Length: 92
Image 1: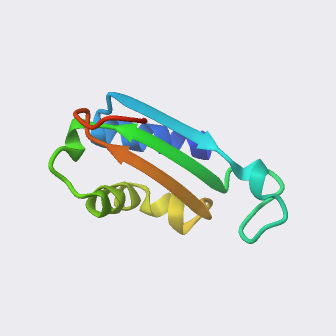
Image 2 (image 1 turned 120 degrees about the vertical axis):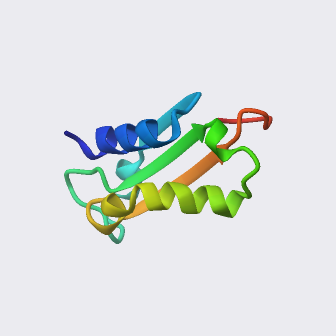
């Protein structure tokens, strides 16, 4: 299973999102710290979930980071997060 697929599975299982987008941006970081030639090191996650309702932005990020702790300790070098509740305007 790819790193991207694991991230998608973990977030889907835990958050039951209305929307989830996991983008591998590793190619944008080639030659930078943490980058590997095979990629799957830098990701952007956009997620909308009712699980985030009433939570502050920092708490949402902490929740996503906790869910992905094993990936962040291993293959993932960087993770950009946009986490919203369904009632919030804008992306994701």
